[in-house]
Length: 383
Image 1: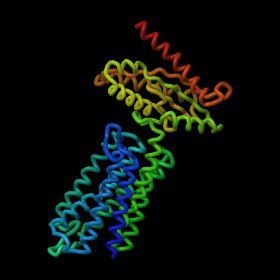
Image 2: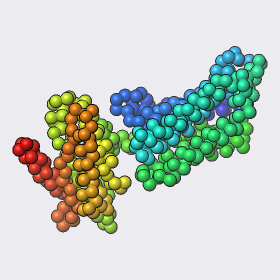
Image 3: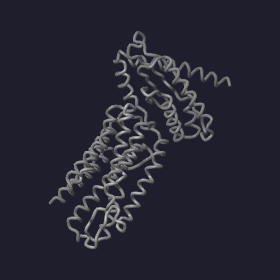
Image 4: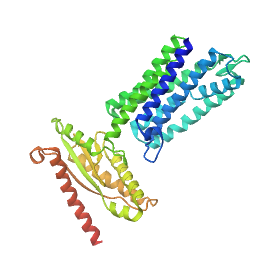
């Protein structure tokens, strides 16, 4: 009955993964225009371990009843099983890279190594029935491990350790709860691997990874509640929480910049709302690159953004303003865009005597921004 226990564990784990994906809604269950790169990677990760566990469940049954199916089917299932072994660790590294750096450039560089490595594993798996590298299936449908199984699992463990190291080294780039969530996959998969190595016939690596799938889903749900759907920045609700926390940290100064995208209505009216959405996304990307590692950025209105800088001083705010203007100038030089981006900004440090509370501080920044907005409109009329 040992095989039945393993089949039950695998099937139950897959059901948990499917239920988790459904609970996250369409972005996790089905790709769409609103799906972010990290959500796509999360879905691919969940699909890869689910496929491995389902195939593994079938193989447990077949291996316990060698003559229950044809040899070709048995071979195909093992090709799929071994061909996918590297996929979860590879996808996890990409998922971690995106969360830590939010850079598609880094993702593309990582893919140059990850894709060939996975294709090599698939190729070896396909040829294994004849070469015996990963496995062999005899005429009686009996399975035998190949001579390269230990190097394969060692390589997968190395990839997993690489992801673990990446999180540990760069953990300060993300909130502590996010870093903890990212640590769950390597910790549980490596622990499951040790248990599996010490107890032959017990498969714990992939079922243990379901814990990461569920924990990541909880983190995603929290981000969905507090994230602006279009730009991926914080929304106003999250901003108010961050502002409240910053103002109650009396040991730190607080700087703020209210940023308005100039001529946004003209972009919408001239090229349509889909182009306007792209302009907002590009504006958000400029703000991300201009902000410091501890700065907080939120979209609070149609074309309005706020940057909060806990611990920031006047020179830091001025540096951010200059960087935003510089990046907007570079955007203007890119002739592939039918529009240019420019910003009106109001910036200042929080003053307890003047502002009293967070909402008053935001109103103060709003007044400063509108003064700059008026000056911008005057310059435009005079041109």
